[in-house]
Length: 321
Image 1 (cartoon, rainbow, N blue to C red):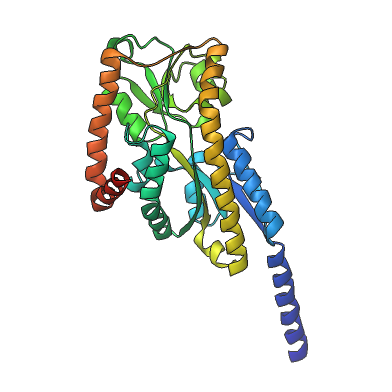
Image 2 (spheres, rainbow, N blue to C red):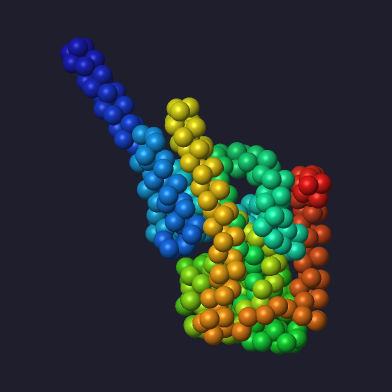
């Protein structure tokens, strides 16, 4: 009997080892399969699958977990990998909000400097949550979409404003609009039914959802460049050998480089597409621009207070570049 138990145990161990070698990791993505974030994340998954014993499967469009659920799902080990808009996690920690501080970094060069300045704090914050940072990618600069012409502040008052993080909610309130939280996958329906009438978001989001079918105005505000990040569950990560971890990091570095380049390439093209599809494209002027800048200054001061010493160090490092 002892021999039978012994051999059975050995067989189980061998089977477990074989299973581990063929392990599948799901990568939860919030955005549509044709969005460049999802396309590059899928290429990242394919590279990891090719160069390691992991079989990484990308699940775009919130098909595995909805966008708002991904961070918690990966943290709890329900998925080994995920992608999330960083600033949507502002309620978890103000460090997550730094790339959405209005008018702090408004172009790709500034966004890259801000990323470099804030990355160490971002990595540490994820580690505290039992997660491993892999890479981060920007959206094009944020513009203002509206069903009404932004001729003055009165024209914006009372508009239903799609918010995706704390910053956008508070900006809406400061400008007299009414914030409502809507995930990207729900945008088309929200604007079509009047649940949303305005928002600040990238050209990518508006293009993916063909918002010219419902929205007449786009203002190229370039208020900030928010970023997504891809991350892994810490315990799952520890189960990988050093060679596999290095291969994942190498694939992540490739994905990050490709994604930053793609975002910059597409930024102007999206705006051109809006004009070609009948939207009125312009820039904010007069009291409307002053209103945006004033609310932005208030939000920056508030963020610096909430972020404390870590926030101060990030800003100092950013401004020293």
